Length: 323
Length: 291
Image (tube, rainbow over all chains, first blue to last red; front, side):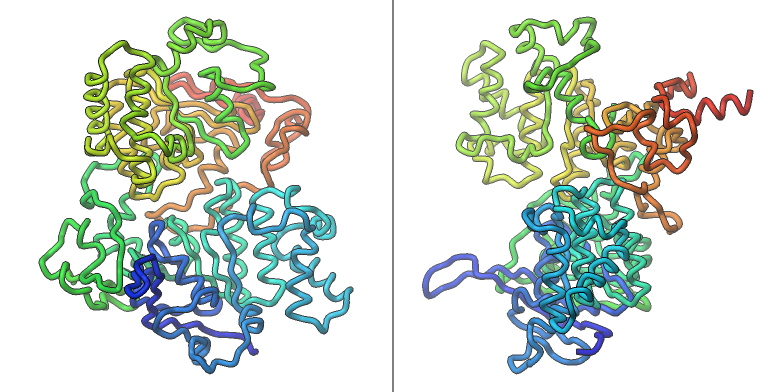
């Protein structure tokens, strides 16, 4: 498989069964009409609260779960089509995922070398033992874990959270991943080392690696990603160039998110940006805008129809009836 | 008052020590903790029990799991009231309902169980329980880390209101300096068990003196303002079992020089008004250079 230049998701819908009877199943709509593009050498941040469907979308792109409808294309080839012949193994070599918890994603009874050697042997069986070892050392050096030879023989418990997350990134790189789907990669790390990981990923973009950066911290999204998409209950509500989205947010939910970001030294005005309400559960039967229940600028129309996509400017889109 | 620092730097241990809740083998080997002139460490068990809750209350990091899943919220609230006050069940129940409304939860939730509430609501219930006896000090150990930003904002706003209304002090423990700058009047920064800098919030955040504080302040990308590459703090947190001689921060410090390897810097005043302290050899060097 040659290097992938882009992954396009179109109108993806993901439903999960959540109980119900034998003949009448109930479903939860985790993602609804999600369309996005990941490009090599660029980062797309997906921002949203817990339960907004960010991780579900990433897992669908990694083919961990299948979308209910919609398409995912890799360089034009539809990977969700029934006849798609690319094996999961070849696909996994190009698209890798990094998880939130670096304490849970490494096996405590194996050395770092084992963690890296296994994927390399699976994806590049032609390599000799020394070649595998060389690649391990080179990858560890690249993620800043030097001296690499010593690190390779350590067990996960001997590393700090930041170092473990670097191992997770190294594991994705070792198999030659072109796209990394990073699911909250820094939220469990200490503040003093978060930036080191973000900067490492930023450097990797220059080598042509594309990132999908899932986060609830919109400030780091702006820092790291070229483009940002804001999700609310399975819907992309606003997306585009990171600076446009964060500096002139148009959707009431994006405005709410940004007003909630704490900033040192600035005591926020207590202006209410949204009604207090629980985050709704979406089912396939739900109608209208998912944010209607909390929105201060809600109109009758909002309860009836999902707003269409409005293009505000070059690379800045919003789904809201206000525009 | 806020206390910031990374995992394992001793923030929570400090909070536990204040209420004397540390378990063996932890020992407070030196020092005294004075609460309105009384030494907490010398209190009898009886006094201590009264001191906790009545004078200080604590809200833990995983407050979401601090509630008992098989007892209703109401029972847990009045349980605290009964333990400290001699009043009728009806009066306690009414007081519980009142407290829930104070933190923005409908009183019909008194009969709910913890699992029926969202994370933010559970956090509010825990705050309500802490408020039961109108303590003078509430210790909050990372109260909002497990919550979404929007919910976090709501809870912080509410805390600020409650603080203004009841006039209690908050010891706010967190690693989020941004949040701290908003709510705290003074901030202390801890590294490897030592307080390395302390002062008025604006002073500490805008003109940090200790290299660790500088690094921490520089670790937060901002949502507004110019976008520039930030550097964070190189290296990894120190191993507390293997502390170096001299300054604990030396291995990660970019402006480390000779005295750092030999003597541990003491916390000294940087400025008197407003009071600002830092523990770093650089300040002495600066002072000598200017003298």
